[in-house]
Length: 286
Image (cartoon, rainbow, N blue to C red):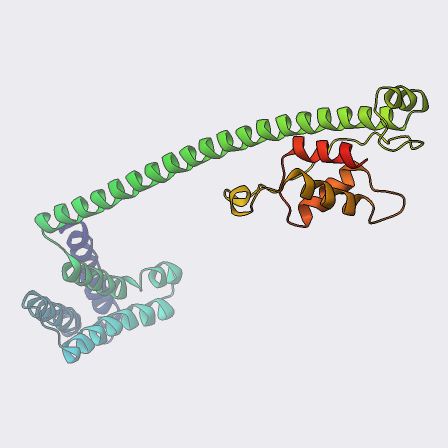
């Protein structure tokens, strides 16, 4: 893995040093003796290489020196400047020389990338541990997602079952209510009809001479249960006392109350008597 970053940096450094030396010798060789130009080129490359070596030594020790880094970048900029100046003054192939003028800066940048890789490099053991942690986290996330999907499917099934059961109950209640409403409508029609009214009157005993009894519909609605000890808490009425109370209630209004109205007022007043005794008292007083 280390070779992937150090080999390009070494190759770029070698190419830029050779190119810088060649340009300096060709460019300055026309103005000064070539040994002098060679020394100038080697000086630029040597300074560049020396600062690079010192930077690498500090990096190996885990240290860093800004002054050395600044000097190294200065030599790199100087080499690039020489290449650019030569390209601008060259009579032939100026574009080609200018195109390679960035090589010293590129080599310096590659060494910077390699240094950053070294600072962040990890051992194989650490990399294996990181991969294990990441795999464990992925496994836990997958299990959590599967658990959530299973719980969601279970809840959806339960809600569907509850909804269907509620719908069935609602349909049964609707049918029952419809049947009761139809039966009640039939009873009401029978009570209100002229022919059926006379038929029902013919089989109903007269309560008061000259008064035709009215056939009432049965009560359909909530009823209030009696207390468990309501019949025991009050003493039983004698027949004479029951007759007196029934007669008072029946004749409290004009015309006289029907048996149904009398019975309702009798029980509302707090009196207690069985239905058989109450009806017998009604017959006696009527």
